[in-house]
Image 1 (cartoon, rainbow, N blue to C red):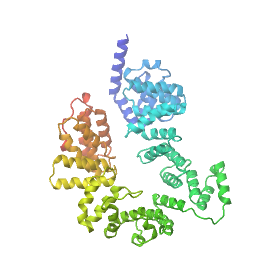
Image 2 (image 1 turned 135 degrees about the vertical axis):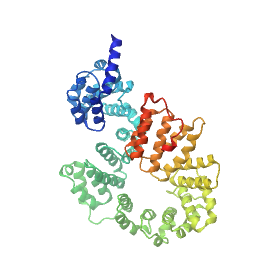
Image 3 (image 1 turned 45 degrees about the vertical axis):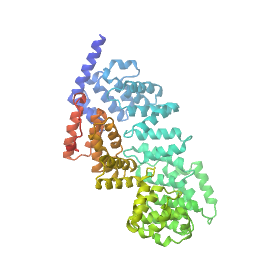
Image 4 (image 1 turned 180 degrees about the vertical axis):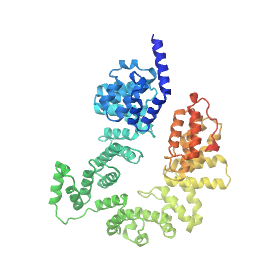
Amino acid sequence: MLLWSVLGGALLGAAEARDPVIMAADKALAAGQPVAALHLLDGHSSAGGPGLARLLQARALLTLGRQQEAAGRLGVDTIDQMNAWPEALRAAVSALAGEIALAGGNLEQARPFLERALRLRGERVALDRIMVLLAECGERQGDAALALRFAHAVWRDWPRSPYRARAGVIEARLIANQQPDQARSVLAGVRVMDQVDEDTRLSAAELLCHLLLPMRPGQCLVVAEQDMLRLSVHGRLPLYRAFALAALDVREGLAALMALPESMRAEPAVAATITRLSALPAAQTEDVALRIERARAEIELGRAAAARAMLEPLAATRPSALILLATIDGVPLETWLEVPAMSEPGARAAVALALARRGDHARAWPLLRPMVTPTVQVVEGVNAASLLYWAMTSAQHVATDQVAPLTAALLALDSHTVENGLAWALEAQRLERATAAPEAVRRAWERAAEDLPKEHPWQPIAILRAARPLLEEPAAGSLERAMRLLERAGAVASDDQRRCRFLLAQTYERLGRIAQALQVVDELHAQADPEQAQKLARMRARLASTGASEVQQRPLDAEN
């Protein structure tokens, strides 16, 4: 009897999975159309008993926020009730039952269901989503250890998870008091991620402002203003913006506090700050450090003219003001070469680097040469690679005899900055022109790929040139090395990045990592032109075939 139950459930599940109406409802739900899914399944013959149709109905109801109806439709309140469901669906049922209970605030019921789903790891179970739900459940239960374990796992190990931002915010909340620097780092990472829902982005911005305000009001101002422009709901960001302004500029801060909604002005901290600022004398000595911090915030917010007006009265005698002024485009730096602040090495380096970046090598080289010859000088706030790279660049125009020793010194550095990456890319091209050994060329491109940031246009080019030879090698471990390189490529934004992602999908296939290959193929398909879409469709069909047992043994160069 038990055997018949298992076999019958399996056959029923397979039949449902092939049902065109259920398949259409499944696609509608995956496309974010729960209402359409419910309409399709309304009155369906399979929806009366435990099965895929009923599971999809419950999921659609929960997606619409109808938690009570979802719970009633699923009809699973205890672990034992799951035995009535087909075995292949039990993990998904357990996951949904846990999510429904969590949405209803029943934490004691939610946790065992979610833990069971994580153990079963069946079809239709997104492990990263389950771990984030468990982290939320643990945080609400006061089990910080469990919450941090699952949140950190998703943040650290699932770089492309759609739930990674939620995991990061949970982790940051849990460590904010003991590890504020790490919490700020995580939240900064969340803020630069794409496709983050508004609630998560707002939570990240509010917590980051809370951590920044006491010691870094300028950065707090930047975060608050940037996310107020980005988000449709501002939460407490106007309050943090006003407090940040109050720390940086009494007059502007007082005006911002007075402009807050009445509900916020009535808060004790706001009322006390308004009273304190109102009692200050109209004319008081300005804090130079705070003015410079405010100017830095103005630069980050794209208000360079305002920043310049704040810095120019200070830059002649304040090296920190001159360093910041040198980052603003359009400032005539040649007029600042003889001011007293230039006696400080950091200011001298900042002006020299800015001149070199603008192509004014005749003025940059005399300033840079003493810092890099005969050896590189230690300058606070400036890395050696930056000094050497821009000195080398200027020397190419005004001191060609110095190019070779500067290049050698730069390549010998044990550091990993964008300047290191650019230097190795140039070296790789030099080796190619000199018809050097292929492995030497490949290693130079690999070092460039490792050092260049994801947003740099040369990074995917370096990755492709370093990875392709590895894919042609029969040596053990070559595919894994190529995979690790290709995984470094940034989000699909350029043709070279698309090539990296396509080659990564092929590499996953050759390594037997079919699920990961399918994920990359689906990601690429969303932005593919018709010709590319056909190639991706062929690859997807091959991957989705029976067990995906026949995988490519060599890269599909003709299709890349």
